Length: 241
Image 1 (cartoon, rainbow, N blue to C red):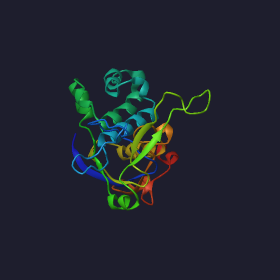
Image 2 (tube, helix red, strand yellow):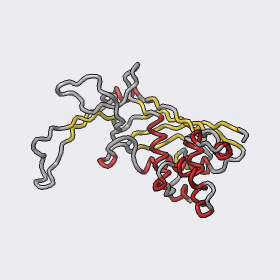
Image 3 (cartoon, rainbow, N blue to C red):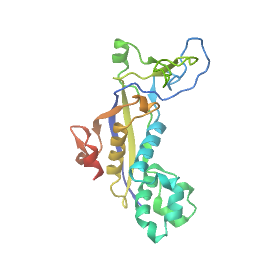
Image 4 (cartoon, rainbow, N blue to C red):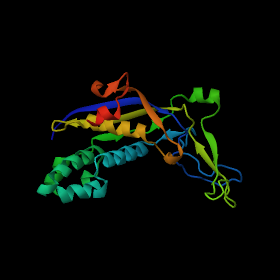
């Protein structure tokens, strides 16, 4: 296995609806935020952890390829590698493990060599339009949520409102991921592009079913142009074929 290239894919990640990626509460204040977002401890600015992007994109791709039922993808690789009836399934699982990792847990030396090192490395995304957000309002917003009774259609008694902190719509972050390319690799850029598109079509962070976390990639650079239109990802229909 020989490394032939390391490619960096960059983009602007635009928040379309309020984004909540949870942080920790150092202290509880009366009337304060119940659910704060993660922030850079030095600047107190919101950021998007690379782990959040990696985990969500991997999960979406596993659902897309129908391998979620196999549980842990690495376990599935170990189990399915030499079974004739599972060969097609292995062909799908293998690139996911190669791209996102866990191949190091495989004890079979031949299979571990076949999988190789993790190809993708996601960077934390820093806020890129801080001054613009401060001019408009603030770096974060507070959203108050209540529990609605299904019987009365009104606010449930005894349920206090929840104070959710979010990154506001319009925030932009610097997205960066590196892809190691080996001589034996094939179509890994297409899988990454598809995963990014699936993220656009679903959500990032928590409370996606309530409208949180819609994002979009723009000004994409470093990704093969055949997956792009005017610096944005092609449609899901085009990418999945």
